[in-house]
Length: 220
Image (cartoon, rainbow, N blue to C red; front, side, top):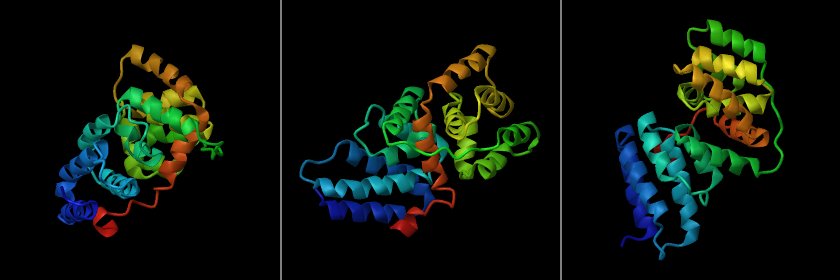
């Protein structure tokens, strides 16, 4: 079996081959982390976790969803990695990640002007771009949030920033994917079920990445 340094060197060589190798690279790193060899030192695990976090930010959305599902029920992984996977995770995994965030210390509310957001949802040609600017999010996060059928990402943003459930529901209906009447009513339960402190931590995590992710090649 290769040593941890040899394994890392191989993975960084894959990273240097460009974006076309992201899914393959993520699969290899995830496989290693999910079945960590007992002879590898635990201290090296954090290095591979950090590498996977950077890879995730550069993957196509469908590949992120496949990867996220592999980490379901694995709350033993760092919260930073789970937060990277949040928007592409199955709904029960999203709920678990929010609970994990909620267990952290109290987080500050950084409000967003609800009426401004609602106006943008009604009128903007590109609401994802407007949402990113108004809420201080990376545009990739805003776009993934709006395309999420579960609406948990948008609910987390609303709960974190003082937006009420009526405004949240209106934004989800105006700018989100098409949903049935039953699904639109169910979104209110989603909003009520999002823990406020957990949502604040998650939104703070997203906002910290608003300046743009470092590429895997640069990190290597």
